[in-house]
Amino acid sequence: MYSTRQDAQAKAMFIFASGSLAYDHRDIAQQKKILAETFAGGGWDVPVLLDSMWDAPDFYFDSISQIHMDRWSSGRTALVGDAGYGPSPASGQGTSLALVGAYVLAGELAAAAGDHRTAFARYEEEMRDFVTQNQKLAQTNVKGMVLTSRSQIWIQTRMLRLLPHLPASWSDRAIGRITETIRKAATAVTLKDYQA
Image 1: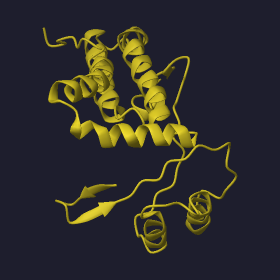
Image 2: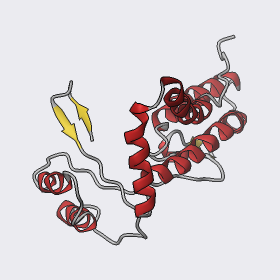
Image 3: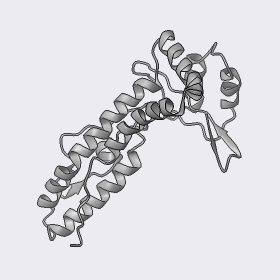
């Protein structure tokens, strides 16, 4: 659950593990039915949230997927952002990868004075490790987002309830460990000054 529009609205996100799902990507009613069936019998406010889903004008259903390609260019065409290396929403880095990728590609094209083959190769060389680290971050994050057993859920909820009662230094350390992984992935690129 999270708030939007200056706390005037609340949004709910349901995430679940599954095998490949066969459904019509244009059939929103079918997608809502999949979600309702998956979370049927859920506790807390799940029944209320699922009931609200049926009238939601902004319902969105998709898989958490990544894009892995051996190369991001062919001929005179290069891919940037999700088209070439979408890390999935689980990384929280999709926009950052797209913006950095666009900056690096534009910079390398300018530096190569129109030689797109050289620019594309340098673009990939500059971006590949950054992309890989952020895709790995998503794979790690999704394990904490989609718990697969009741014992994992029990442990995580107990830890979250315990966190506010711990001494500040302990909770700061726990949160620091989580954010350090994100910080490392988010800063795993050194941007060149292409105007120099």
